Length: 302
Image (tube, rainbow, N blue to C red):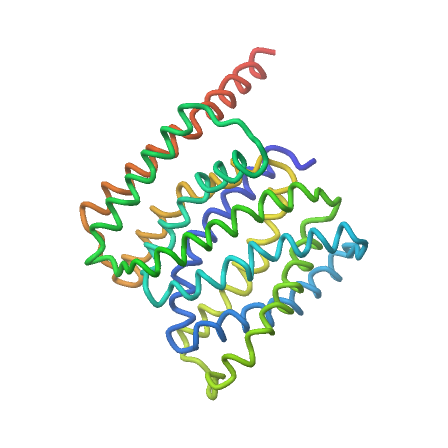
């Protein structure tokens, strides 16, 4: 198992990538059809991930359990991202990131009702508070490029992403993170190909503008390769709800990045809503935070 320092560094890197990915997605579709941008992301990422796999000399298992794990992992890629890309037509990058702030709550609900995990009263309270925060943001969305259909799309995206975490964990295949990422990208590429007959008429006929091209490359290298390596590494070594906590800080970072680089307006009520969401998530994870603090003090006392 990797060291705590190694896992912490991986965690921080994943937060940074996911905070910048919503804006990269929005920029990538500025000169490309949304679904073609998604397809190209996987088609470019696949050979690159295979090359990395070969360079690292990482084995690529193809037994039944491994294939099951690749398929489960693909739901955090094509399964979730197809709805996220569609939502770019209705939501700003900051709002997309804020909607992903629901991931810990969604993971908690899935864990409770699908896998029988126990939730404390404080966690239920945290969920309610966080939902209130999101409601404030959504009701104050006139300056935040908020559309109800976009919110629905992101809720579906977050649900599929959160469910994928539990699914991969339940399969529990002993696979290296890079192999898991490559396998999931492969499955995602195959599934994404099913869209071609429906979007062929929107196929790119020219090289995208520099901003769109840069964003596409960023989503390939960072969001599809580096982030997925970090993601599956963390899936195999930490709790699903702890992994979902990566989305607690990304909304605030993404909103700031969107405001600075994409001139997305931020109202006072959006900050109020975001603060309430973070407070709700703090309540939800309070027992975990307290347990980690007590564990750290116990280690120091030895």
